[in-house]
Image (tube, rainbow, N blue to C red; front, top):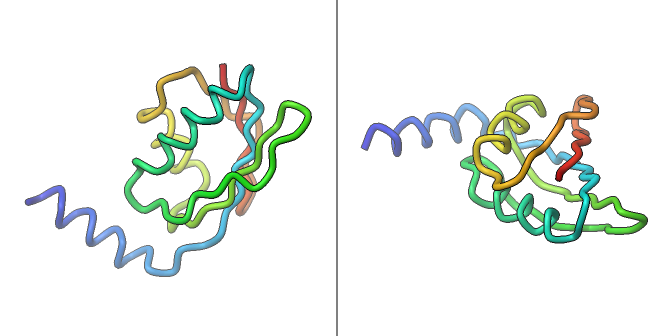
Length: 98
């Protein structure tokens, strides 16, 4: 019950979800799928779409009410591979996955 309420409070506080881009530089396409699955499991992340994959880079668009650094921390906890933060800006996060 407490987890449910805290999730609802986070959603209310982050009611203004911003569109973000997550650029992933994986060692294989399989890592892209793992990142996508992890994103979809994170509370507060909505509308995850892989919009581009070319030259070994993939770009996801998504909505998230928090800062990119918070998204990265939550992704680290939920993904079943190694990730490294390469860069972070207002609404763009670039990571490497292996």
